[in-house]
Image 1 (cartoon, rainbow, N blue to C red):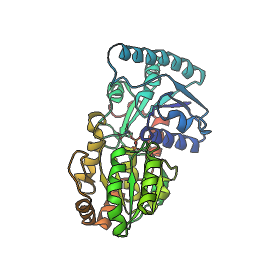
Image 2 (image 1 turned 60 degrees about the vertical axis):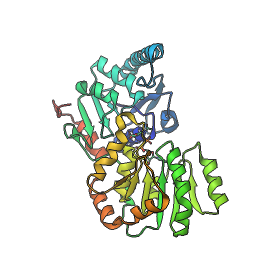
Image 3 (image 1 turned 60 degrees about the horizontal axis):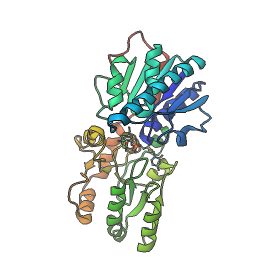
Image 4 (image 1 turned 90 degrees about the vertical axis):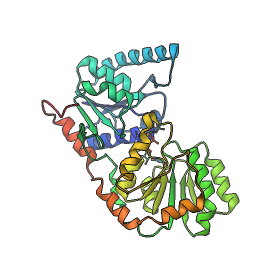
Length: 345
Ligand SMILES: CC(=O)N[C@H]1[C@@H](OP(=O)(O)OP(=O)(O)OC[C@H]2O[C@@H](n3ccc(=O)[nH]c3=O)[C@H](O)[C@@H]2O)O[C@H](CO)[C@@H](O)[C@@H]1O
């Protein structure tokens, strides 16, 4: 039996879901252990693809200080003991972690029980928990790190299904990551009149917090736009887009590659160790993406001109070559048929 852990935000959870779906295809229903904090419950509480889901007390340690930090560590330790009991109850043979604070209890629990731990790192710079656990894991997967087991990023097949060459800038999609991004909403607001004037259609994922305000903005400005807070149909939305202005969370970034949608990335400036910048830089270094720093000066007309100068066809072709289907399959194959020694962690 396999257990999956980790999450917090959509970028981690989407990997957990991809691995769960691959296990389901092979007739295996894993259990899931996440956190009561963050988006874990919303994503998986009622997911029939898991035999059972558990949400334990765990939260991030990194930004806490003093007594609060000690309390959080105590909670994680207590939940790690709960995980030991769960592993015994479900006869768990392996734990797959997608990282994030919600992975901490089950990961430590697995180490205490001697259960093999498999870790997937999504980002170009590894997270704190993953760095801590890496020396003890059975295998460490990444699409960036050459010292890890390199697999294709486990992007849902739905993104490959809608992949196509982009030729003309007719529609721009604004993406704020799983929670939406205020900066991208404000940027969309400034760009929208110009885009409308140029005959470029707008799709805009706003996140929950600013959805009503953004909807009101488009209505008031008389600019037609497909505005939504969160959609389960991102592939359908991307199918209509020729270009994206987006945060550079790893899952979104690789989905854009799979779909062949060129992008201007605006990395989240406070992301741990600036990892969103390095995610985007890996593409920008190969001239297949643009990056705009949130702190730099910009002006709608100049930004649009920069986008219009891109050779959409060539960039979208090259993006599609950067990722192959079957990332989840590669990972599950290794987990279900481990060699005595995987590549060094
Ligand atoms: C603030 C934060 O912690 N961000 C991190 C988080 O980003 P975040 O949770 O924003 O993750 P990503 O942008 O990588 O992925 C978002 C996922 O949610 C999906 N989606 C998004 C919007 C929507 O309406 N519907 C929908 O289904 C996307 O298709 C994608 O699969 O995890 C990423 C992967 O570890 C990291 O790179 C990010 O730095």
